[in-house]
Length: 420
Image (cartoon, rainbow, N blue to C red):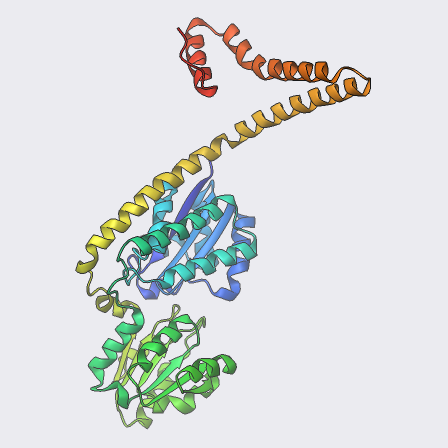
């Protein structure tokens, strides 16, 4: 019988291009149902799904990892061979180390970035709400958060890191002489868009517009930067006025198509447009990149920018890896101790039954008027005899070879002084 184990599998920006990543992304609104399906239809006892623009990973406690992988392929209407070349599979200790490295920002496109930790916490909350976060994953993620905190507080891993938002500003500066003369459109109102808006607002663009499915959320974000707010339905009316477009939504389908952008370019008299699509699945149709006067970048296109300064952080990386390695050892020791829990529980249950039996017997004697001191003495002797009967009997019944091992073990268990 195959034992259950911690297991992580998935794809990320290092193993798969965005064209593959977007095909296995999980949408927030369907995450709870997906977790429910995985844990009820497969031999998966616990599960959590981390799905971001750079990675889709499933953390689980299962006896049959292969069936969990097959489930993900079927869920996304894919055949296993279509994703197999991009897939990594990490059992037990490797899974634990991977979780620690991801949360610490060591496995990110932006080395040391902090956004991934919040995304993991969101994944954990989703699993908790779906009822699929059991003891093992709960312990793993709690330890993961502690390790990430230790890495960030004890090293300079996040120092001089270039965020995706800062990289977008840097690339825009290569297209336009001055961002201060441009109109900027942000599509979406989530954390990534908020971060991008903060970076671009620091360059004092001519006008900022926020478009979102929910107008109220767009207004709240736009108000922070003295910008305008529109709904997604109004995009055709405002798109031609935008010089820079940054988009990051959770839409399962593209928001900006080639036809819409063609009309916008004509209305702009072919003035260039800088576009960054930070969404997975993508918000902008890939064919838009073929249009003249459009400079379209995806999350993968920003990779070379955000890797700048990596050499300066190698010392911090080594320190972080040392913290993680030590933490992995501690966690695996905890995992190993869980195998003995049934034995410890059975031992305590047996001792408790013996205690209750002798207490009940003593109470009956007291109720009959017996001398309390004698009853207490009898109780203590009876408990001592019962608790010591098993080890004593085991020594008496053991062979000479077994007896030596038993005596050494009992000396350790009861911290007995050395015997001559």
